[in-house]
Structure formats: structure tokens, C-alpha cells
Length: 237
Image (cartoon, rainbow, N blue to C red; front, top):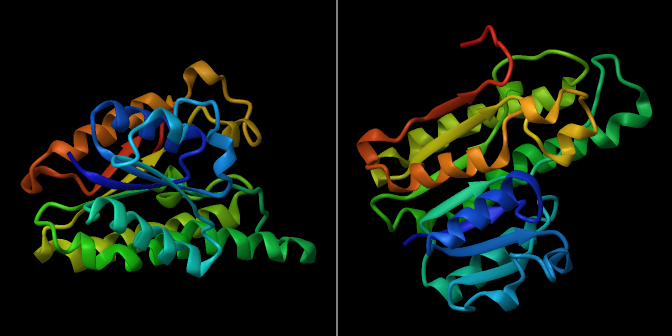
């Protein structure tokens, strides 16, 4: 049984992962921007034991909310041995962007890069107490190649891949293992806003949840650093 932080768990990939892991008996602390989104859903705190299931307000752009989330989780679980970073935003941005898009670009950087960095930093001492801690980061195929009018998104995901490598290097001797999951188009609301690719041909959120479940039980000697998931032919791997 692991003690897990999951960001971005109110919908999409994060929600699917949370549902999978709570069924498997792990202790979950979910960080979301609006806690009321979980009312009357399978992730409603009222449906789960408060000793094993916590929902906390978390805003990746708020430096203090990360620290509060970690501290309050430790009060309940006594420790944290896993982080699954799912929070992220996606916006279309051309290389030659309009001046009024500057704030969107800054928001993407703060949420997609600084959010995971700060949350990992705040939880690092607790992860270091375990000899088999896990950090799973939902990156993207956009962190391996750039195409289309997604300049700011790709920029943030390339940076996030670099951050994953640094986390891996820094945590290796402490038993912390890092996995960057790099999916192509996933059947979520976020992808629907950007792409008209058929839903049935996209990667499904439950498949990513199954991958995360497997990563949590692998021994330190067999945890992959990068998992690329393709729903269309990619030339990068």
C-alpha cells in the first residue's frame, strides 16, 4: 500500500488513475483546484475512509498551496512515498504569437513546469525516507518532438522532460524512481478542444491508469524512465 499524491485528479487522466489506485487499496491525497467538483462522484470524500483518502485544494500557480497540501497529507498519512503529476494545461500558440497571448504562455510555464517542480521539492524529504519512492509524470509526446501550433505547450513539455531527468539523477541513490509517461492524443476533454482525432482511436485514460498501477509494484531495478504511447505513427521512437 502506497501513500500517494495525485495532482489534477478531478478529470481526465488524473481521475482515471485515482479511481484505479483507490480500488487497489492505496492511500490517496488528491490535489485539485475546486474540491466541490468531486461531490457526488466516485471520488467524493464521503464515499471513502478519511484515513486513506484526502482531497486538498491545490493550485499549481500558487506556491503556498503545494506546501500546505504536502504538510496536511503527512499529518494524515504520516509519510508520502509517491507523486503522480497529472495537472497541466494545453493552449494553441504559434511561434509568432500575438502580444495578448503572453499571459497564456506564462501560465503554461507555471502550471506545466514549475507546478511539478515545486510539488516535488516540497515532498522530497518524505520521498527520500522510502527506499522505493516513485515519481510518475504525465509529460506528452510533445515533450519529445514539436509539431503543429503548440509552441508554448511543447516548450513546457520539453522542459518537463529535462526536469524528470534531473529528478531521476538526484533521487537515484535514495531509491526514488522516476517515470515520464509520454502519450500522444488521449481521450480527454482537453484533447477534444484541440484535435478532431477520433476518440476511439485515441489512447484511453484507463490504459494509462493501468500503466501507473504496474509501475507502483515494480522493483527499483525494473522501473522504466520513459514510456512513450503512440496512437498514431511517430518518427521519434
